[in-house]
Amino acid sequence: MGVANFAKLVEKYTGHESTSITYEKAEQFMEAVLYCIGEMSVSEGNSMIQIEKMSARQAYEIGYKSVVRKVKSALDIYNDVLKGFTGYGNHCLYDTVVKGIPEFFKWYNVEFEPQNTILTLDYPVLKDLSPYSGIDKVYEFITCIRTEKIFLSRFSEDYVIDILRSYHCQYQDMVENICEIVYMDIIYHVLAGKSLAEQSFSESNYKQIQKVLFQFDREHIKNRLIEITKALVEKYYEDNNDLLKYLTASVDDIVVRLKMAVNSGRMKDV
Image (cartoon, rainbow, N blue to C red):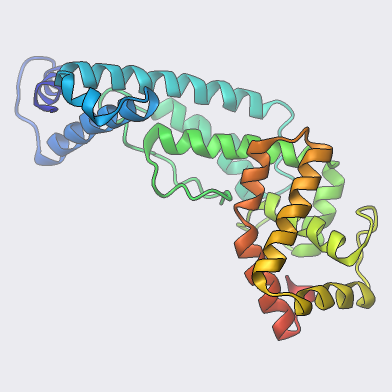
């Protein structure tokens, strides 16, 4: 399906003067063609039957335009994220978002290598980005950062930093998701029946949390955390469904960590 478009890329790359390219470069161009065709099927909502009815050139050109639009959309979201953005003193978050992302937009080559993500995206978000590459991966990453910004914006910067400092004395250098740390802190408060305004936890608070975790199995605790999250999002975030999905995606992992902590008697280390 991509032979004609492959030849077109080779001609553009060589300036119509030669068709002699390395095997690695040929492989890169074929991946570029397939990436655009794949983007066309996803972004345009076309079925495989519709795609088969198109010529290779049509499929590639529609996909290419979809990639271009996604780059513009990602850049628009990114510029919005930057307004009032803070890294809360964490180098990984700040460097990835403020220093890294602009490098992607600077060097991303839609025409010859749209499949290249360029960045390692060191800051870990709560969504699995392994199935994505190129602008798809960066777009999903930026969208996650926007969702995290919405969540954290309900708290003052000092409040978030206090939580991070309590979690890790060298929070500035840790490579962990900040949103999840604050989310877990909220869960701790709810399970302990404690106001968010009170940051320090007493022994009785930990015992209350342990009691809940000992009393119920993982599935029950998971459902309880989802209920807590739904109530939180409905009350403070105008029932933002994207935020709800994003936060609850980490519930399974949180439940495992909580159960392991209570079974080992190390609740304070979570």
